[in-house]
Each structure stands twice: as structure tokens, then as C-alpha cells.
Amino acid sequence: MARLPYLTQDDLKPEDKGLLSRDINLYRILVHNPEAMRAFSGLGGYLRHRTTLDARLRELAILQVGWLAKSAYEWSHHVKIGYDFGVTDADIEALKAETAGRASALEPRAKLVLQAAREIHAGGCSEATFRALEGCFSNAEVLDVVVTAAFYCAVVRLLASFAIDVEPSYMPYLERHPLPA
Image (cartoon, rainbow, N blue to C red):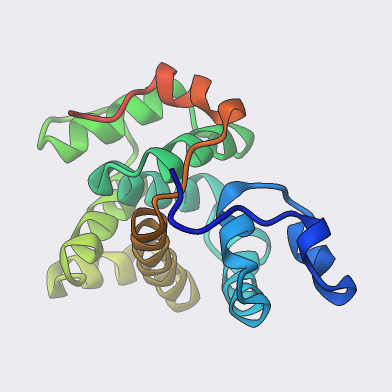
């Protein structure tokens, strides 16, 4: 159960109602501070709609962070969103294999994005991984790989700190691809 009450549009000032255009629990908590929600949505919106990074690779980076953090909310939401952007069940199984140090059929760029996301989750991208990213991506894309993984490291910590619940409509994604115990 969430540590703050979930707000609805009825709880908000007229100028803030649009902040809940997506009625998801994360937003329903963040609107306790509309300015913080606006700031959060600025970077989140950039990553979702304007990033230079390929959308499938972006979602794989986010899923990697969600998997490592064992964040049911993040994982379930981005399994669904990932499907919308070309992530397959085989990609998800490959992510699990790569995380465990096993080989997968993922293409080298996807493997590299997952490796970078794992390192960022652990504290920062290594020199070797950063140089490998530079060899495969433009500088703008390298920046977006790092910003994406780092932003979602923050998101999973928000979700955990506020104990935000997975909405029932996202539970089938969590059931299809359960997190490790």
C-alpha cells in the first residue's frame, strides 16, 4: 500500500488537473507536489518522445534497471510499453540471460545498452563500456543511454520509497514475466 494517498483530478487545482492525463499510480503520488511532477515529466517526456536513442533499445535499458531493482511497478509498466516499441518476449528472456552472465541472441548494440544500464544501476558506467558505447552510437545517443538508465534508477527508488502499487491492468505483464525472488 502506498505511503501517501493516491490523488485524483478532483483533488487538484484546475491548472494542475492535466498532470493526471495518464491515470497511473506513480503520477497520482507525484501530484502531491505539482511542480515536482512537472519537472519529473519534463525529463520523462523527453526520454519517451524525443530521445535520439532507438525506442526498443531505450525500453531494454529501462527494463534492465527495473529487473535489477526488482521493481514490480517499473518492470510491469515497461514490459507493456516495451511491447509497443518492438521489445519481444525473446528480448526479455535474453535480458534475463545477459543479466545472469549467460549468452543470448541479442544483437551487439542491445547487449551493450544492457551492460551500460547494469553498470549505471551499480554506480556508474565503466570506462570500457563508455568507450564501447562511443564506438556504436553517436554522442547524443551515448548521452541518452546514460540519462535513460540514470533517470530510471531514480524512478525505481521513488517507486520503492513511496511503496507505489502496480495497477491491476499491469499485473498480467508481471505474471507473464515475473521478477526474480
